[in-house]
Amino acid sequence: MGGRGDGWGWERELLDLLRPGGSSVRQVVAWLADAVGGAVCLHDDTGAVVAGTELDSGPFESLLGDVVAGRIASAAWEGQGRHLRMVRLSGPAGVVTVSRTAPFERRDSEIVARTVQGLELLLRARQGTESERRLERATSDLRLAILQLLMVEDTVSARRVAAGLWPGLLDTDTACVYVVESGPEERDRLAEECLHATAEQALVVRCPAMDGHVIVVTPREGVAGALRSLIGSRPRVFLGGSARQSLARTATAYGQAVSALAVAHFRPDQAAVYAERTHPERLISPAALHGWAARVLGPFDGLPHHTRAELLATTRLGLEFTAVSAAKVLGVSRNTVRARMERAETLLGTDFTDLTARAVVHLALSAHESAAHDPDRAPGPTSADAEDADLFAGPALRSWAHDLLARLDTDSRDLRRTVRTWIAAGGNAERAAQTLGFHAQTVREHVRAAEPVLERRLLAGGGDLYEVVLAHLASGDLAQPALRGADQDESDSLVHR
Image (cartoon, rainbow, N blue to C red; front, top):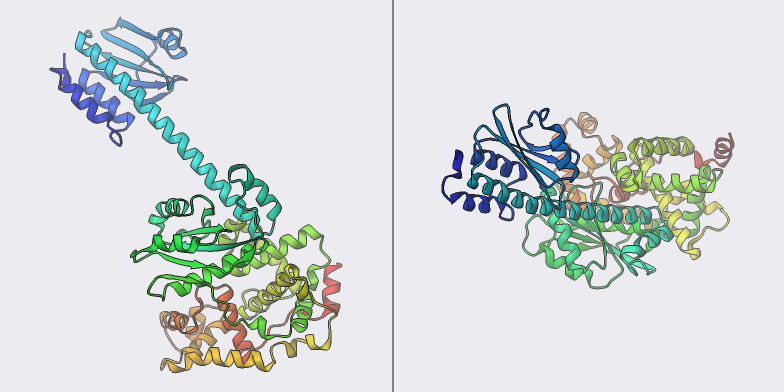
């Protein structure tokens, strides 16, 4: 017999190939061909080639068909200078065909038989692994679907979907959101560790928008401690957590967790929980704020209820993230997000490339959301107190803005001027650099240096940046943007076109 079949060393070689985590099916088939000094082909249950060398089955096609169909378990064929053996696999259906010019000796037949048994085991293991992976992917997709429902405030559907696999998980009025950040290459392992640490009593989702983020939504107390234990001494893993929020405000809680995550990067323990710091909306008269927000968002009121809710939810997320990231969070296409954002721009009569417009609309949406979830905050009749000119002119808000921006004055690089110019340029470093006479990279470095001083993310955009923009509006360093909603007559005419 030819090849490596001489003696019984082949058994050890075959066993080494079949060890867990060892060789692939293709490698085992190639080894068999070398061991018997011939050509080997593995067919699946349809007759398609899975591995090995495809043989001309013309002379023995009907015989191969019988073996593939399971009418016979094995067959031998001789002719045209060839000797063939065909053996049907049990379990994972398929056929191994071995062809050589020399007749099959006893040891050749033994090698074929043992290799077929090994292939059966290998294919069963692979089949089981693939089934597990499909189940894991399906479960992961389901978790993401639940998160997307929570992000658009559809808590009823989210609970219904979760009840089948995780009974009781969302049978709660409130929850916290945590975001764990690692390198993208570590995220899958970190997600599994989060599942283990929370005993699968939390909604653990691989963030669809940020490759290195794992999102954890949980109603349980003490989860923060379990998640902190995962960080340990890992230099590139960070944790941010939200304040407790109602399930309907999951999107708000997520924004808080991301904001806390930015702070965690500057903490020695690499973790932070969202602090109820002073936010600008808390320094404005509730009646003035909610009356103003109702007028700003007035152009949406003429839309059908479902369309209005969909547009408001998309606009809120679109102001927090890029169109691509918002689309991933919502589970729609980025073109859909962009189309909805453009419609919102048209209704509001503004341009979202203007950071002041984004900040003001974001404030209006936040006020609208808080009023929707807190009846005591719902706006009453609009009064003169709600005039735009007065909204940012209150002494409390102006004092807050002065204190916040004054933190930048201690840096000799004049970070305050750079940040103000960068905001006025729509967050575009190149345009800001032209105005300042700097290099664009210098602008980015200045803005990045301002982040730990202000304890807010700037380059990433979102709520933290908008607070800094509002501080510039309140201090008078930037002009307020024009919005169609501020003129009710114009908004009415637009809505009813």
